[in-house]
Length: 215
Image 1 (tube, rainbow, N blue to C red):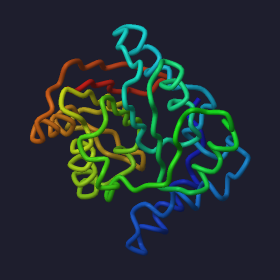
Image 2: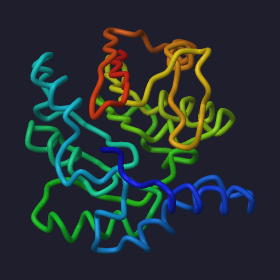
Image 3: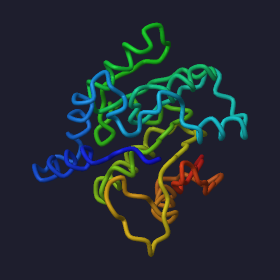
Image 4: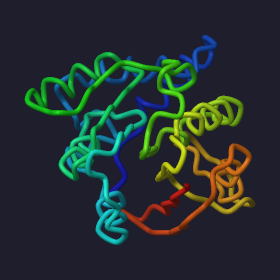
């Protein structure tokens, strides 16, 4: 069953009216503090699509520099760390990062506050593996284009990017946030030198999702 996104959409619309495309994340985490049921994407477990991809590909992450975009409550980051990765995980919401640090006090993951639209300069070309799960689908087209440009710049030579998002056909309406993406929209990563290696169109919890790996 789909989680209730009523409050999420109210906050997103409120901050958008202020000209702030991302401030609603921190507001939502503050309202949901210590109650993950109020965070629609919080599963308190790794994304099944990530687990399935890793099991299928057997991608070796041992000692690889990994980055998790919009880490939320940290379960995907912890999964990558358990797979041997040297993981940095960031979120734009300080409350989310602090929540991760409390949940996993002995973690090897470096949880930090950062903005995908303006990442630290020394992250450029640094990461062997990047996980982007459900962040792009929360952005309108202009911000998403900027985010994709920034994201691609963080991939190291020979590195990999895994994108997990809601999917739709071009003729389907966008509806409300989260906004599903088309395969053509994701193909824009090719402009930044990334090559699609695999594309999976899956149904999970009755929601169509794309799982796409780029190199």
